Image 1 (cartoon, rainbow, N blue to C red):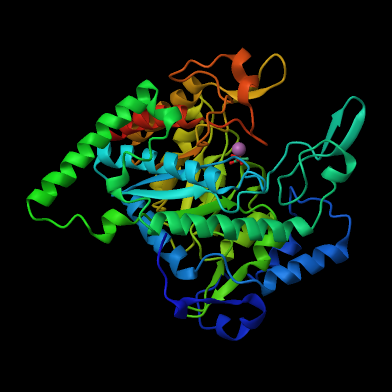
Image 2: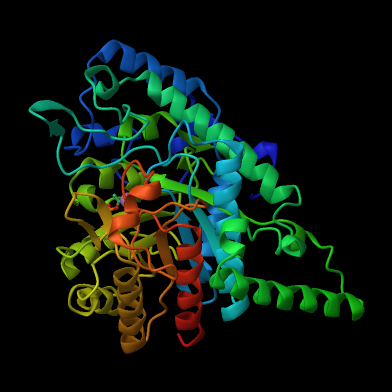
Length: 471
Ligand code: PEP
Ligand code: CO
């Protein structure tokens, strides 16, 4: 994890107004200015008093990340903008309070480390690693309610709001969950910091990240060969008298991210940085706006335009070049490289037609953007029995189309954004094991969208690495 001195600690929003005037601020913005706009996807909390108590408690809690770490990520992403690095953003669709165990976190980290090293080794480029982790608890939904056998209840909105079980009590939005989300994020982040700083992510451990489920597959064998190559290169460097016991080898920088959906929660964790006086949303290093909440005059765009973290927004098939340009102007008026990531999630077969014009327009306008491909969310469908899935081939096809459009325009493809897990789940069909629709029930565990399992994640990464090699 990034390092930070204590002097850079942030202060609560309530104590910050005096320093606000010294720093670079978005005009008219306050941490709560979003409340004057229409905010989609917010739950109907049944108890306003309990909600206010939870938010007040969150305001008293320490920040989860430091402003200086977020700034460092912006710098790294600036290098992605310049075509000098590649962004890997990956993790759960929806994290679970119950499944945020040490083993689960470690296994997700292992896969992310494997994916990053495959990309880094193949492309010979630094990989900026951002997890959908330690805070990805809120989900946008297409309907506010869910009906089963004639019973209608509030829809499941992620563990930060309610529980997935289909009964009245579980589905009731519960503000105590905001604190549980904070606590689970803190515990997850703590373990990630220990793993990434304490030797587990040491490049010399490259073999140990290959957990049994992956190692026993063809893609696991392919990874072993690559890991052998890295080990040989390290031995060679040692033999040359070069120091491989350097912190660059021993430690990894893994940043956290989630969709900034529940604006009350995000506001409560927004603080001013004591060094710059700038506002940072200290719930994660990077925050993004989802496809359903990216209206220019909406509350989510209003909130994120004022925080200094690196931010992103998804762009789906209905996004127009003008909308993308307006988002660039509003979210990154200072044209700071690394500040804004635009994530294309168009669906296979749709990328040239829907994303191409956006890419051309933003490039022509000279906006520095980290481009990113989310090949997952435009390719979700339901099987005959109603199971939500994605086909590996469609995911791969969208990624290929995305790289092809960039090759055409002469721009840097930037990064990929994937929903993955370290487990041997059966949620997406296809891939190296050619998982069939009838096998989805074997181990279908996601609380929201279907994720690539560890083998499929690595399979896709090798293919991304090949595309990157020619980009
Ligand atoms: C997500 O990333 O889980 C998500 C809901 O994405 P999108 O906003 O692109 O649909
Ligand atoms: Co998702």
